[in-house]
Amino acid sequence: MSRTATQRHYLMVRPTYFDVEYSINPWMDPKKPTYTELALAQWEWLHDLYVDLGHRVDLLEPVPGLPDMVFAANGATVVNGQVLVARFHHMQRAGESDAYLEWFRANGYRYVRQAQWVNEGEGDYLVAGKKILAGTGFRTNPEAHNESREFFGCPVIGLTLIDPRYYHLDTALAVLDDETVMYYPEAFSEDSRLVLKEMYPDAILASERDAAVFGLNAVSDGKHVVLPQAATGLTAQLREHGFEPIGADLSELLKAGGSVKCCTLELRAG
Ligand code: ARG
Image 1 (cartoon, helix red, strand yellow):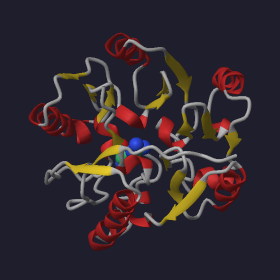
Image 2: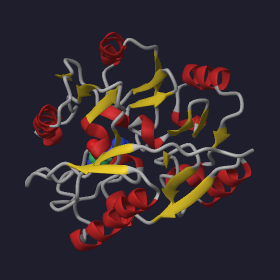
Image 3: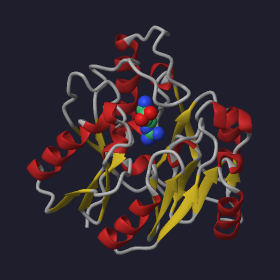
């Protein structure tokens, strides 16, 4: 099966002030040392890879005192040029929303609104063709799903996460193209597992081992799938399905519980 890449537009935030100063997910241990230089080099590699693949990458200036800001996926959800800016669950990240509001307003986006209900952008909202797969359980409030259904005017499919290691939907599921996803079933409630099975009978299923190295925190352009290089099982499965996996080493960012997808917000024009 041959796959087709489409050009994408991403927003990223350089990890200039990256650090693990607090713990808001099980991966974060403030006692472990972090190396900002290494985080910067790993992030630069990802940024340059997107550019080499032909994608357009915009940058938002990082803000001192907001060490998780590198995780741009959490800042907003953008569909048809409409921007729903995130409202963060933890106060440690609340300050990030203003930076996104300002950036989108300054960059000519006309429909920009900060969400009323807590939702952590593309951490929990994954656009899959004409619908949005929406995580809840740890961060995004289930009420937020109605808000985004109304705001974007498209079906929103709620999925409940049950394992604290997979606290955002984008740590447990990746959209590969409009019809294809890969996910780790054990991260979801029994009901959500049934929903996923029904919707995606041919999905690629991740092993516990691949999920635990953040293999599902991946970015696909329809053909190239950038994912943590340690996810060797998924890499082989993706190849069998006609995708071109590209392994990334973002070990520093993993100390904060994030990887490829977390660093990448997709800007979808109208
Ligand atoms: N330390 C960040 C947090 O817990 C990591 C966010 C990762 N982002 C993501 N899209 N999963 O909020």
